Image 1 (cartoon, helix red, strand yellow):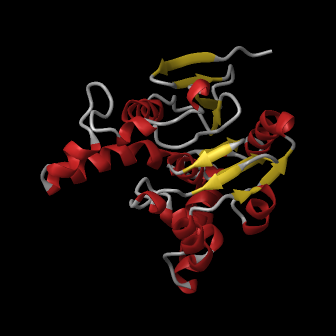
Image 2 (tube, rainbow, N blue to C red; image 1 turned 45 degrees about the vertical axis):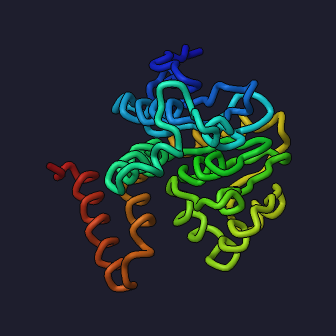
Length: 265
């Protein structure tokens, strides 16, 4: 039995790496607030990505308690905001450059999950609302409990989803359904999530962690470089023509063949 090592535990985020060094787990650990998010939590998520050892191949993202994440902490919408942080009202009154830079810093917490050298899995239960929905969308794969409730509530609050979630949502469910989900702010439950591709797998709530761990183990079965090359091919496919994709496939396969033949650099 291998023992996990804790590499980070701050501001509602815990990062552990298993004894093999191949699987990291990022846990949202604010269950009393349904893992509501804040700028401090986003900075911790960014730090977790930067602290991943090079041996890590799969990252599991999970939330403690009944909900994956209920979204942005409501304190963000008060005039005073969070202690030691500029309030949203203060940001709105600042320069365009300062506002853009602040939002870009928030987005960093949501971008590293799609790195080609990793496969990320979100294990999602209960509410995944707003920023919680976007964080689940940041991952490559989603294993969901049968009580999952996704919702994109930003538009209902007079805002837009700005944490990197719009592109993966459109990629998964298509433009028309993505627009309807965002503009209405309605809940997407487990059956629809699985049917539309938001969820790769739906399982009973008490089987969620085991199902995510089983998927991680399955992903580790293939050689790392082959998975990295395949992920890169698939991630780039939408931006290439069919002929360009065939060229990319040939180049990737040539690298794999040379590596297997011992001819790689």
